[in-house]
Image (cartoon, rainbow, N blue to C red; front, top):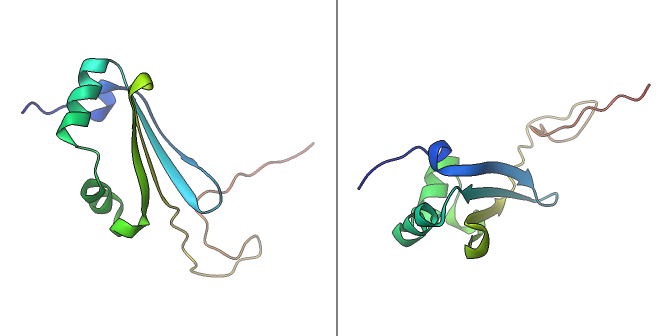
Length: 102
């Protein structure tokens, strides 16, 4: 089987918060042929996500193949590290948006 980098076969690769307790990964493929090959090979599966993100299978909420958009959407329980209490927040948060108003 040929090997490709995801960046070469996908037009969109993104992660985003889908609420305070979930994180979603979207991959939208450039063409239906590649999308169908990836889907049929079951490359995006629980085992892959568990190994890549060091999570347990029960932390994977769903893996959805959305054929009309050539997309695979995976949602996991959002990892939140509670390491220390700081002045700004309780959790040692990796995803903070800093906004200043003038």
